Structures are given as structure tokens and as C-alpha cells.
Image (cartoon, rainbow, N blue to C red; front, side):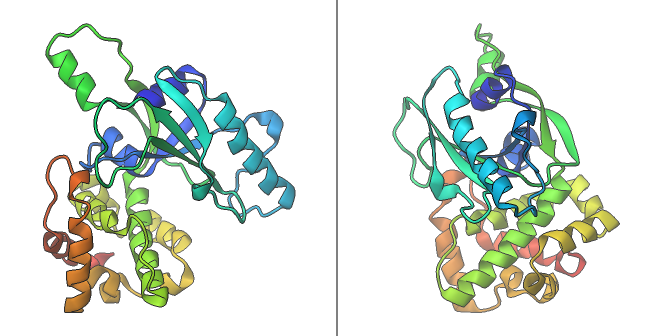
Amino acid sequence: MHVLYGLKQQGFQFELKGDTSLSKGYGIIHRFSEDIDIHIKPPAEMEINENPKNTNPGNIQKRKDFYDGLANDIKIDGIISVVRDEAFDDERQYRSGGIRLHYESKTDAIDGVKEGILLEVGFDTVTPNNPLTISSWAYDKAVQQGVDIIDNRAVDIACYHIGYTFVEKLQTIATKFRQEQEDKEERQNLMRQYYDVYSLLKNDIVKAFIGTVEYQKHKETRFPPKDYEIPIANNDAFLLNNPELREHFIERYKKTAKLYYKGQPDFNELLAEIGKWVEKL
């Protein structure tokens, strides 16, 4: 919340995607989301083509220069350092780049929660979106108790439409699962995607979006061909019919329990809910 407030105070124009919009914007998921998936509008004078499919070498270099410049330009009260985190860069085309913000922590580290706050800045689809106010548990609690504090909520933050986010999370599960089966290397953050899809399936806006022309079009756009050609109803990424593989996924999921501040649902419960929908997805 405070980082978004600071970015807006500094005059940056931006839109949120991903988990931050789902947790803090829409209130759909209830887990820690220390990464902020964000599109920040670059200065017009940089003449950056924002189309992620643009592979012009000069434009790719401009994207990288933009991320490097952001790390120098971002100044937020309470943030003690801002550095580039190139581990999260798309090094081929720089469609995305990592910027890590550090603050002085007042508590012990939580297992599974990364250090600092990561801005995953990128050029991707951010429309349609809705203006929402981003708050925090601490701020809301203080206001309820009548504490006189600075209002540092992030107001009128454009948050990506949750139906489109839902499609992208389906794609993430399908693609990361396939990659794991191909090279036997576990992908980071895969398990939380099942929880997110499960949570989104309880939302009426998402339910109404499923099966629409916009849903099908976005699915075709986002899914790699080898994942799109497998119907979700037949994709083991969403079924996990192999008992040994399912048990392994359950154990992986349990290791992330501390991320869920309102309790972690049983993994089989997630699969059961997803299973009710696979024929429509």
C-alpha cells in the first residue's frame, strides 16, 4: 500500500496486475503478496514502443534503460534503498524487469516471504481495468481504533480486470506444469496459482466472464499453442490424477502455509472446486 501511495505521490502513472490487485485491490485472495506486478508508463521522450511483441533491438534496449532509470528515480519515505533485481528480468527482450525496494523491518523474517518488496515492472496487457483504493490491515485497524495517522492509502489505482487475470493464471498453471514434466525442474510460485484460481472461481464477475467471447479470445492470445491445444478438462495440470504426483504437490503446497494469513485451504479442496469447472474452462 505505502509503496503504491509513494509512487502516486511522485507522479508516476501506473496500473496493477497480478496478485497485488487481487489481494489488496479486489480482496479476493488472502495471502502475502510481496511482489507488485505493475505497468509504469514510461516518459514520452523515451519513445518506447510498449507492444510486448516488438523485438526491435533499439526498443529492447530502451526498455532496459527505463527499468534502470526507475531504480534511480523512485524515492519513497520509509524505503531505505531501491536497486535493480535482474534475476526477474526478461533478458531476451526486456518485456519485464525487477526493481527491489528495501525497508527497515520491525519483525522477524517469515518463511516463504521474500526480502523487501519487488516491483515486477513490465509491458503487458493492463486493460480493461477498474479504479480501486488499496488499503492495508494495519491502516484499517488503526482507523477503527480512532488512531490519528497519516492516510497513506493508494486511491484510484487502476487494477486489471479479474476475469483476464483468471485466464492468465490458468495459463500459468498449464505452462509451468508442462515445463516441470518436461525437464523435472520445479517452478517457483506454481502452488499458489491453484489457490488463486480456486479463490477467483468463487467470484461472480469471474463466473460470468467464463465462456464469453472475451474469455475465449484472451485465452487464445495468452496460452502458448502447445498448452492451448490441450482442453483444460483433459489437462492433468488441473486434474492431477496420478496419486504420487498429487501427493507431491500437496507436500509442496503445505510448505507455503505461512503465506496464507486467513488460513490455507486443503489442496484437495482446491482441486475439487477447480474440477467442477474444468469442462467450462
